Image (cartoon, rainbow, N blue to C red; front, side, top):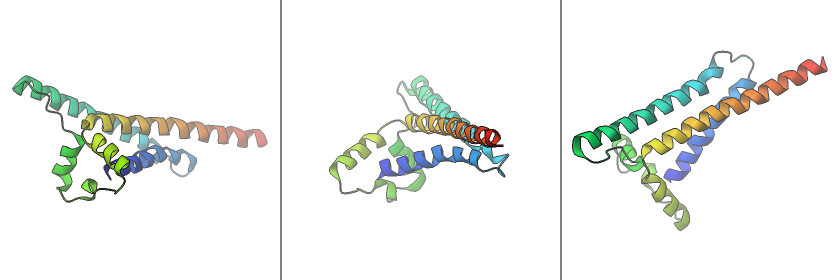
Length: 133
């Protein structure tokens, strides 16, 4: 279930760049950039936390995705439920054991890519309208 939730969060993060297609949203168009920066800052904080563990205890202390979700939502959350499909459950377990920094960096990259992609679409639409006039 964790992988499905991550993929839906990734799709939502990438699609936020579509705010460029909505003309009244002038200031909101920068939301994907701010979100990407915040996710990158979270990734940097996870790396710093990991290195602090190396310096203090001699062991990498960065949180795994599983540990972070367990601390935030508790053990009985939807995140920890099985889907019933063995291959998807195996992929979910593999994803949940990764460091949180990989998920944050991936979401940050998706946010910034979505911003650039949708800005290009909006610019092409604007040029096409200008050519028609």
